[in-house]
Length: 496
Image (cartoon, rainbow, N blue to C red; front, side):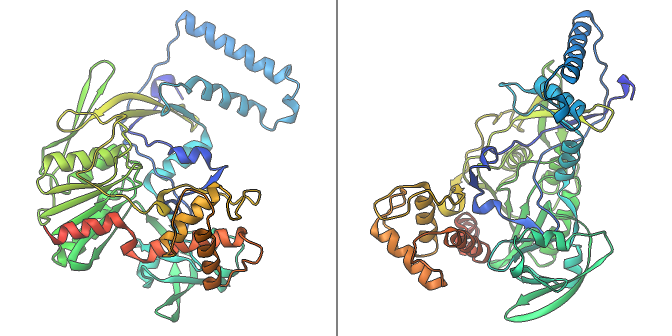
């Protein structure tokens, strides 16, 4: 591709959560276990523009490129291990480009190779082909969302259904619950039989696999309160949200809870479109400013819903970028908006992704973004109007089971602290949660094992540890009262 035809994509890119850097040391939190039936989807934040870039050809640049070429060739020919590495040329190039973009000042600038680029752009829209449901790992997978227009939605599968089998294969006999995704995946238009349990009855549904977006999900809660969960700001999120909002309006909903927890961002233009669903036309919802002082404004485009009288926006430490920009726009430009939860991440920079002509991209920070009142939350985050936290069993780190860690009485370990949090969440009496295995903790664990049929004769083991994790997961997914933040929002709406 000619140098002056490089594609440019401007973005407000989502961060990599700190806990993702340590996945080799521990497991995810409970809130990170929800999966799409067709594959897990990561969340990013990006917006699209088109432009060009002309590489420099001055002498310093030429000298540098010649040096890179020399080192590249020497590594190919002189390096002792060069014959042991498959695709050595590709690895050397990837390492060189990653090195060029790695800085202490800016963790959001990076080089994306072909594989990374494909994963990145696929993740942004949360698009997939499959049944069109999300589930959580319980003793049997519990469906937590059925996405509008998906094959599962059209077949009649509902939130709260339990997946029993896929094409006759009992999911409880699978080695890993993630294998359900492999069974459900396939080409759009193909069919799969899903056996579910609902209210004690077993039902078979023939589902036609289809494309679907998991970027947004909505439903009506008790007391006719609307609930809209935005997982990320994808290219179809605004249009998909309209489908849920239209149903709410038809049912007379006037209060709306918008859940942005664990929303790391999405397309900047999508944020603009979603803000336009609620904010009057022509309002500036966000401005960007680059290093040269060039300012761009993003305004609402009209056709908003006027039926909603009250809004509560739920946020947490993983709410970032476009999700933060949307929160600020709603809070600053509308009346009757309450922000609830915990302090957000604080991501106020904008990245641009330049196509390098072969399918790879350079993703580089090019500007900062600002709220309607001109403020920046970069590195600070948004302080909610009402601070509410989830139970620590849902948000604390869950470490991978390690049989070398002590679990006897009068010992201390991170595993014991995890167990104490989980037992307390499940209703067992716990006097401390500091990792010290006292008699109360030991007795509570023994009672849990007795209640659930686990052998505790030899103390804690992998089976018991995993079962606790799954049972906490199951309770949170099936019992809305365990979501302290959402329950507080409902309470506030009832008193509005």
